[in-house]
Figure (tube, rainbow, N blue to C red):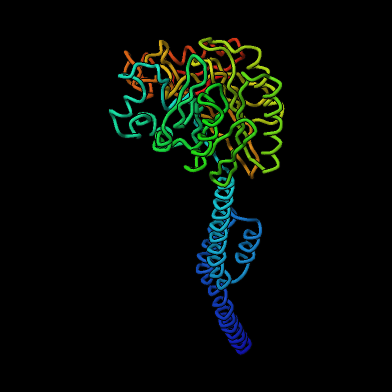
Length: 423
């Protein structure tokens, strides 16, 4: 009986020992399993952070991150490389956008035109010898004097256009008229030194010393390489890769003949692929502040046939500005550097500026317009032939005058800074 008990005890002890041994074998792997995930969790945590970062990027990157998260720690190490790749891709995208924007901006071309009124470089031989244009030229002995005050404005634009009223000739046979103007051919340097790039030359004073004086003036323009438009003679001025075409007519010769010159001139310039066309018209009634029927007829006709801007001369005083369809008409720019009168009673004038915008070689419809109030003289008591920008109350008064004259023509008006505010 005791033997059996002893044997049973031995059996139990043997089995218990075996069980404990087996248990230690099982327990060890279990502990090992619980010890390993501690390192794996760090990788998992890092992988999770990476996943969040890449999710801010593309969906493709997000899928890559998920695969890495599910994979081994080696795959987790690969994720930062993917992240860097995604970042580089984002930078490339930003660079591409900047390049695209730069390309878009580079396709824009802005052309600023400045226009001023009657420039008579000379005087009538009957004018007071001590104060006329000739006397001032002899006194200053410097062609730069005359446009010195406005040159900074003209230098900043792309083209300045004025109306040349008079002749450059040595002829002495004066036309039988009240006023006849002529100057020496060297006087053209006044415009060139003042940063004037082109002239219109179709008016009632371009033959003051006969047809020969007209030809002499044309010859001087060509010799000195001054672009000009005159009746059937059109011209093109090139700047910033654009062609600015010009037509000039004398409405005083009749509306019918002026229409013919406008139509043929526009046709010619279109064939030459002008990007922008300006028509200058010498028309209206002197010393009146309202355009007459002939002025309106010719201006509207020019725009109807393709002109982008119409500039008016002859009244010698300011008139209003009209927007007709998508183009502007400046009915009278008044006098500017005007040797035709030693002391005009109305010295108010202006520089009209308009910026034309081309996008992908097509002219956009814009209203970038400004008027710069000026006086024909830097002296209020006499004409010293030096047009000068007006300031303060004087400038405000001139802008108000233009607004008042423009009111009857439509909605065009200008703010205190001279910029267009309604149209």
